[in-house]
Picture (spheres, rainbow, N blue to C red):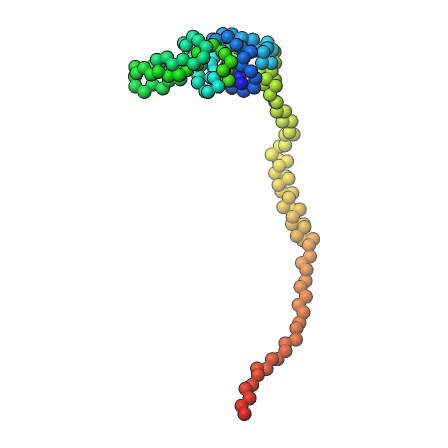
Length: 177
């Protein structure tokens, strides 16, 4: 996988691919973008990480992982000022264990970066007709007038009440024998 940074816009783009095409290159080397489909582009390797997530460190000149004493920088958090720590980092040379390679664009090609990487560019919205405020106000005024017409056109339905004759119900009387 490649992470390509565009210094003009500050955006980064992800591109799937095999980092071994830049085998034996080191951090700071300039490479051509043709290998990853970016014709005409020139890129610089700025870092990366291996399969276990250990970062590449520019000042460790070797393949594979090492455990140097470091004070600060890539792969180290400064606990206290001047305290050295032994941290595991990957050397600055690209080998078969590198899973992510960070690249920075130095020279731009003819195509835009999105197009060169094969990313889908959304179509621009078509311009809409400009409507003046007066036309909008007229439309707003017309809508209630139409609704009033509808109300007057609709005749209220007369409700027919059916008269139900009331029946007299007599309460049962207790018979005393």
